[in-house]
Structure formats: C-alpha cells, structure tokens
Length: 119
Image (cartoon, rainbow, N blue to C red):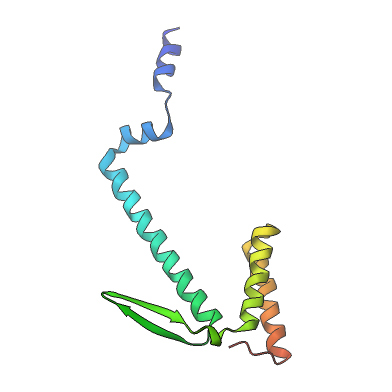
C-alpha cells in the first residue's frame, strides 16, 4: 500500500514535472527561442507569399520599420490559382504537404508548357 501512495504523489501534470526537473528559467529561455523561431518562419512565409503572388513591390518606410508593399496591379493570376488550389488541398481536403507540392509543381509545369505567364 505504501508503494501505491508514493505513485500517487509522483503523478502530476507534465508542466509541473518539467518545472520541477528543469527549473523555470530554462523553460522561459526555451519558450523565448521557440517564439523567435516561429516569428522567423512567419516572416519568411509572408516574404515568399508577397514575392510569389506579385511581380513588383515597393518599400514603405515608417520610422525604423521597412515593409514591402505589393503593387496590386502586378498580381500574378497563375500563381494565385495555384495558391488557392494548394490551400483547398491542404485545409479542405486534408492532403499531405508532399502530395500537394507534387500537384502544384505539376500545375506550374503545365502552365509554363501551355504558355501562361508564371514568373
């Protein structure tokens, strides 16, 4: 019975066990690094989306900030259609990323072969 009581005392949430084992300062550091990595990934995703969907951009300076604002007239319709297809395949039909990449690469190749502007 005594062993059973000790097991009850050891049970707890995963975060409580992590805090006890690693300490709060290490958990705070890892959380900060994770937030920085997520920020870099989001920044890259936005950069590639803007430069893929629009042919030209213009820099907008506002104090220390520098933003690349796309010119709406330079929208690439072929890239937009492929992007919408990819969004539907991933989020609506729940396709895997590799399978979606193959389909979108095929669409891009087909568009280039029939003469649609792709870049």
